[in-house]
Structure formats: C-alpha cells, structure tokens
Image 1 (cartoon, rainbow, N blue to C red):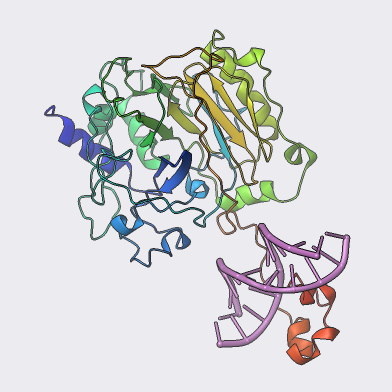
Image 2 (image 1 turned 90 degrees about the vertical axis):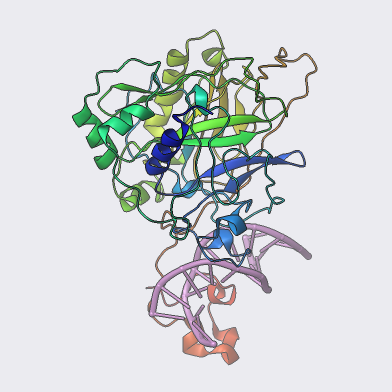
Length: 405
DNA sequence: TCTGCCGGGTA
DNA sequence: TACCCGGCAGA
C-alpha cells in the first residue's frame, strides 16, 4: 500500500465530516440505496429498525434507505453555472427518509468492502490511483465530531497529482473549503462494470477542479464483477433550505412540467461530453426547482436511449458519464453500464443490468408538510363520540375543512 | 399521549 | 373518487 494512503484517507475523512454517505448495493438482482451515514444526525427513521444508537455505524450498515434528501443541496441555477465540464447531474428534489428495503448485512469483501468495513471505511484498493475511500472516523465514539479545517496544502493533496493546478490559488481554495460546501468523494460499489473517468468539478468561479484520476481499463479490481463507483457531491450554493422550499411549493407551470431533455441524438457517445451535458443541463436550469442535486460520477455508461423515469425524471447515459435528473416524486432509475472487461456492444444480447432505487420523498427535509393547525378541529370540538359530526376530511383523517387555520 | 393530517391503499 | 388507515410529527 503506498505510503501516502493514510494521509489521503485522513484527508478524505476531514473532507467528509457532514451529511451522509450512500452506497448502491446490489442484492438479489436489485440495487438498493444504502445509507452509510456515520453521523446519522439528520434522519432518525433511517435506523429506527436497527434500534441502535445513532452513531452505531455497524448496526446501521446495510440499512437501506434513500437519503438523497440530504445530499448536497444545490441552489445555484444551472443556468448560472457553467456545466460544460460537469459530467453528470442528478436532480433529487426529494426522496424518502424511510427505509424501504433492508438489505442483507454487508459482509466484508462484499461490494461495500474497501469503502466501509467494520463500522468505517478503509482505503480502497484503488487509492494508489488517486481514489481515496472513507477511513474509519478517528473518533468513532463521536462520529459527528466536526471535521478539522483543511489547509490549502491538504486540499492540494486531495487534488489529483497528475492534474495541473488550474490556477486555483490557496486563498480561493480556502474559501472553497470553508465558505462553500465541501466536495466529497463518494465511493459506491455497484455490480457494474464500467470505467470511471476523469472528473472535474466546475467551481462557482468557473475554475475547473480535477477530482479524480482516470482509472484505466485493465485495473484489476473489477474481478468480482463489482465495480467501485464513485461520485462526488458538489454543493454549489448554500442558500437556505427554506428558500428552496418556496420553489417547490405549488407550483409554477415551469416547475410543474417536466424539464425537456435532449434527444437521443444529443446524447450520442460520439458527442462531446461537454456539449452533451450542456444540452442536458440547460433545460433543467430553466425548469428544475432550486434545490437541485448534482451527483458527479466516475462511471462509463453505454450509450442507450434516455430512460424515462417516472416522476419527470430521466436517466441519461452519455459516454463516460450519466446524468440523472428528476423532480420530487418517487423515482426508479435504471442504467446500463459498460463493462470495461466485458465491453459488449449495445443490443447484442448482453445481460443488461438494471439498477433500481425506489424511494419516496421525504417529508421533513423540504418542509412540504404544512404546519399543524393550531385551532381546534372537529375531533376536538365534537369529540370522538360525535365523529359523525366531523367534517368529511376529519373523518378521513385529512386536513380539517371546517376549522381551517 | 394526544392530535392533525400526509400519503397510500382499497373498493 | 370516496373512504379508510398507518404512521409521522408537533403540541
């Protein structure tokens, strides 16, 4: 193991001191979104079944949830953002906070291995190529301990050595790290075969930050049929959630209608990535709600027709990346990855893997649940014994229509 | 624990 | 569409 790995891992830890992690776990032919939250400070329900204390990473491990509600919140209009170097985008306005499926316990050396083992993450086997996975928190008894500030030097260490300095000076770097949400590198294991590619994070100031080093075909850790799947959460704007809520409230026509998406032609693999994604993102910038989530993936996907996702969502593979975008409804997304070692042509009878995450929107994360009425309702006024005097809504356990606040 | 009511299921 | 109810979350 290269000597720099502990340092890299520690650095990564310090970068990742907030929110939650996720993994896509393949099991029984289905892919589940698994909460890897080591802090568990935002969603109680995610581990309620485990009945474990919040920091119980192990008990929490494998809990299948959908935690996208806490994924980095992007408030920046995509129109304002120069997206032409961003290789994937995910619009996740809301997903469930409640567990849907409980996956089998995650065994070491399974798909999550290397990234999450024995309550924490350990350096992955690919760290020597510039990837770092999550090490066990230095203080597991207090996982929510804030991460130490990063120095500009450490930030540089996080950068890919092979990448040139993009002109981001240390001052900017510091601002990025302290004033802006910290880009986090995620490692998600999938039973996919694909080729993570070079990532660049487009900063708000327009500068491009290389995030990963390219991973080449032929690297050996695809052997078990699984693949390390990385993505980077990018928080582009830190405006208040409440601000974002207003944009989710019903409903301007532009928000209510699904965004338009590029045609099949627009996402052909031979189309340049930047060009393609510009096309992809532009409609979103006009129609998507303000709390958008961007997931940056290191993944190669076969060029297949865009997959329409229920709920105004779409999965769009395009060469070396994919973008997933949707608005708040429950979603299912599927994708067909390209295998680096079994690179089959599309439509040649290959086994297409379907990756599914089912979820439903969180209620609290976006405050969509209206405040509870303060006044007396039918139930209080008439009592349970006079239930027939209640308004219909109250009888149906709906919002009271008679005593409206 | 009570209450309001959301979200989803059923007929 | 009407009706019902599990369950969440605030009081």
